[in-house]
Length: 207
Image 1: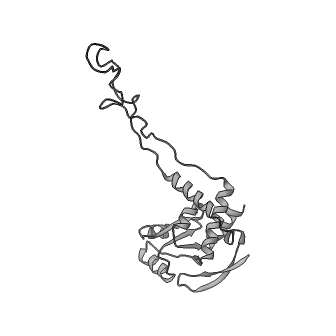
Image 2: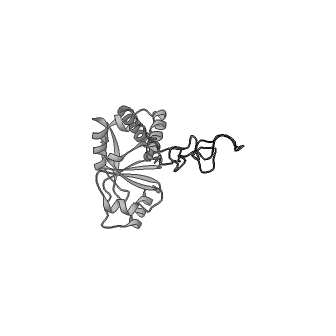
Image 3: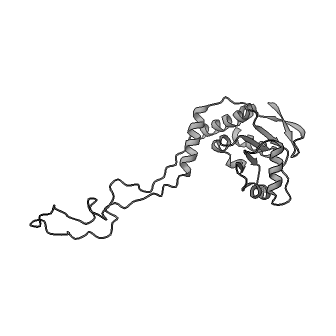
């Protein structure tokens, strides 16, 4: 266990908490970063691109003209890919691009990502993030105190005011602890964790 400072929204140190070294001081594994990011992006692909092959083209049941005597090449269907309006050969069809990593690999990748942010000094622990309404300007002011204008904020539960106030700010994203992933951690310069989220992250990644 090691200690890390906890700040309030005014960037004043309020206390220190112990972090699990297994999660926040793990060995960095770049190859797992690659696999995790690739898996995350692949799962977001819709895979809805589609073209019609000759089986999906309407019509073409009758032979367009007789086999012999016309001087034309033989043709059995108007749906032939050789004809205008015919089916497409080897065109894209709907498919699922997603693939999953083993549970252990996903967990170790998250350990590595969290540890990387801590080693870089880009991990910020906040005691709380109080908002009394939808205050985008207030969120910006708080983040500027930490010089964290490109940050991922992780909460323990639903924080409607924070989530909706931050969604219009470029470079800022708010996630709940159970949606934490390697791609979003690496895609932001700073990682801001609420102390209540730290406890749940440790419980999720150690069990």
